[in-house]
Image (cartoon, rainbow over all chains, first blue to last red):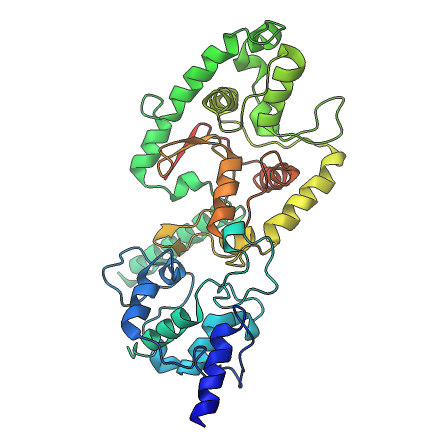
Length: 142
Length: 258
């Protein structure tokens, strides 16, 4: 069992960026890395406007970032509204749930047009960064 | 007393609906209206508007003889306040003898190469921005009036298609921000409707002047899309679409923007 888990992990880290994740209902129940993320790192990613980009569109309980967006719902209470798996799918590729979503696909490279050369073939966040953000968002219980 | 109060309420309701009716037919707003009062004053006051420095520089270039033809703009076009009036409100357009649209930058360089026998000015160069600012200033206060040329329709459609197309790593289109979410805050800043009412603009974020092309390139970089190469027809197509979308709005050039 433990061996299988390690194998899955090895596959995940050696596979090309943004390999297919198993979607169950409206969630990706399993961690993309096989490891839990780190909420402190996740908070820093969310707050960073050139890494997570989250606060460009969302507001959130990050008081030191004064300039936040209102194109999307507040991140406050995200951990009450959604499970870790639901948050994971929404970050990985929200278009799986709503084709018209304006939320960028943070862990998908397929089907994008005219991606800038320096970002081509890269996901917005790495698998480990997605997990960190998920770990942070589930702590936001309002 | 009750009657009086009722009357006041009635008047307020009528007044509000009248105001709504007046503003209601045209929901378009220039980015000027989304700026703070200090920036609006900076644009309105020619002695405070940094864009006017470029207008003045452009006025000098207008008189300067260049190229092997040793001609200035003024040698052919005389007084710009007459000959250039309305030009910036009209372009992009298809110049006579050509079959493809060019924008005002393209038009200035066409004149340089064909008539002045001078090398074209590099895009976004100080001289190009100065001439753009000077020529555009001659249309300040005029409504945007794209030419009624049926050959432009296909290019405009191409521009509209690009405007609506999702692009880049962030998978966003122009329309998502500037149509669907205009007026909302992106990182605390109001998203404008993207009407090209003030170009070339002096943008505080740039600490300098820039053309509409620069702005388009900026947005593409922002959504992590590959900017179209300099001189690509996609820019002219987008400009054509945007000018048509802003038809009738008043040109403010040289505009100031945050």
